[in-house]
Length: 246
Image 1 (cartoon, helix red, strand yellow):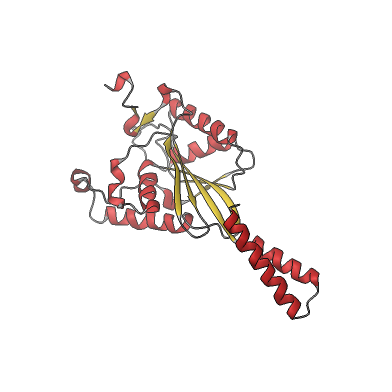
Image 2 (cartoon, rainbow, N blue to C red):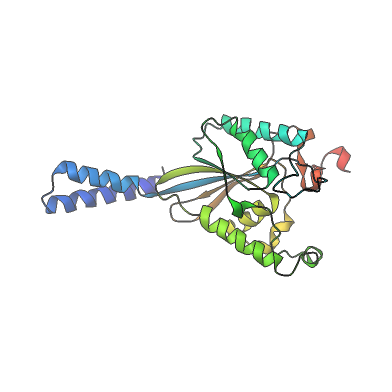
């Protein structure tokens, strides 16, 4: 816990004790009140945003039914689960987009994190928000980008806020567009710039939301836990520095 937070909590506890003493309350009552106040003080929320693994883009079925992970995607998810388990972090919740590739990725990751079961968060589903790319915007239906932005704003309002009581660590298994847009939103960058970034399958992005609501990026799109041959980007393309991508 940051020193500044401890100071604030101590001040709150002392204020509670003083108020109780003035009212003639028993010390035990004051101690309980102070403890409860500390327990319910806002904490830091650390978000681990995981892009889903490689999936079958040729599957004609709806994304909530088909378009599941390929064998390579399942391998990526298993390695990501092992990497997260090795962190030794007490994860509180595992959220997943309702789309098949995200649900399957989350389920595989959960195998390495005993006690966690994926919970669906519809607002983490893939969509295409407003972008500076005119060719992308031209392919969208009327109102599609605006609807996506509204969805992602809901996701931001839900997850990118301080923890209501104590520190929390939450996993969000979702999609490239979603993670890139949320990254821009969290850092106060023009959200229309999201398509200027590429993000690997099963990469890890870490953003902390401090008790005062400020966001800090620690990691973006880290895929170093995957061997070079399994580091893939949008469309299943290999990393641009690999020979086969040249």
